[in-house]
Amino acid sequence: MGKIANPALAKEGEKNFLWAKGHMTALSSIATKYAKAKPLKGVTVGVCLHVTKETSVLIDSLLLAGAKVKLADANPLSTQDDIAAYLATRAEVWAWRGQTGKEYDWCIEQVLASKPDVIIDDGADLHVAGNLKHVASIMGGCEETTTGVLRLKALEKDGKLGYPVIAINNAKTKYLFDNRFGTGQSTFDGILRATSLLIAGKKVVVVGYGWVGKGVAKRARGLDANVTVVEIDPIKALEAHLDGFLVTNIAEAATYGDIFITCTGQKHVISYAAVKSMKDGAIVCNAGHFDVEIDVKSIMDEAKSVKQVRPNTDEIVLPSGKRVYLLGKGRIVNLVAAEGHPPEVMQMSFANQFMSALYVYKNHSKLKKKVLDVPLAIEHEVANSTLHSLGISIDRATKEQLKYAESWALE
Image 1 (cartoon, one colour):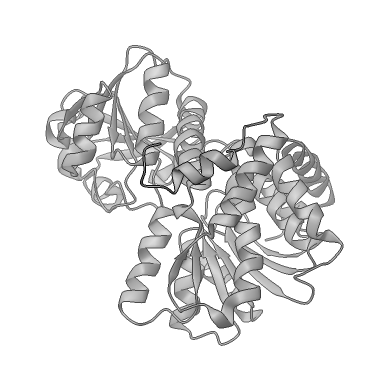
Image 2: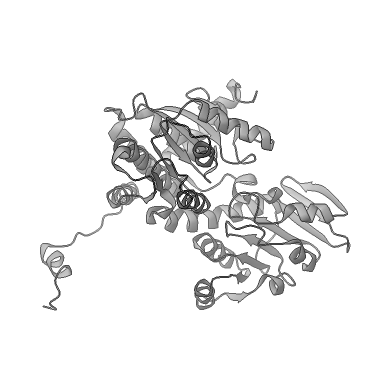
């Protein structure tokens, strides 16, 4: 906590904020449009996100719109302390790298204690805590991730969702880019920083072929790895096969893989049984969410010894004498061992967050207490702003084409 009140660290964080902002011009231009009117003036926005340089640009946008921001981190190992220190000069921040589980929960409690009007979350920990504690001030919110959306839908199904939530992850301008290109690149950024090993020629096993898995598999192939995909969904398995990847089950893949990357958001997709079958020196990491995809507890319980051999790389010696290397304690490797997604892709996700926070605050009384999609008008504004920031111009349909598209006659 003391790291936050650190002027030198805050100065470094400001430099990184400015670097990210310079590469997130689509979000910045959208925020600038609302800076004068300040539609969130007096509104308390509770935020639970990975505290990165990209997140600092979203916080800056909310502040420009007049919001009072209360920020906690979405992962005990993902906070960039310089960014937390910088943001603490502008908002209330409860975030530092290396929190215990209790400290992580305490930070979320502080955000809820501030009685937020709107919540912006990553993974739904803040949403779940807010709903279970019946925080009356919450008018609505947004959710960033696949896992978080699933948790909120479960709350909705059980009749425990107390306010409308916009599912940012369901937006095409989020999952087609953030999940695929962002995770694909940043995952290997994390793996390379943690291991400094050659990817070319390695047998890389990607567990899960959703948008995250697609991005990771594609990046692995681009680095000249031999890629295997593990899936439980027959349609996704067929898609991976026709995309040119070897497809099999985890029991088979465990016997030959060099690097294993989970991309599912699901629990224990790499079990201790699978780890026992791995070759000596296999590398295991998670690019999905939370720290449940790899059964780390069972692996550690059975280990003969565990030692850190590089930053974010633990060598685990199994009873057989084989060594397995776990990256980032089983947490998301792109944020633990690297800096998360690049700013150019995060500007779209966070533009959706910013616009949807405005939307849910303005319209909460008219919205059902359900998980809702991002309005199409917001998606179009995000896409157009991003194209403009990239200097790309596109065509528009003519009146004749619009009429033809709505007609049943082939004339």
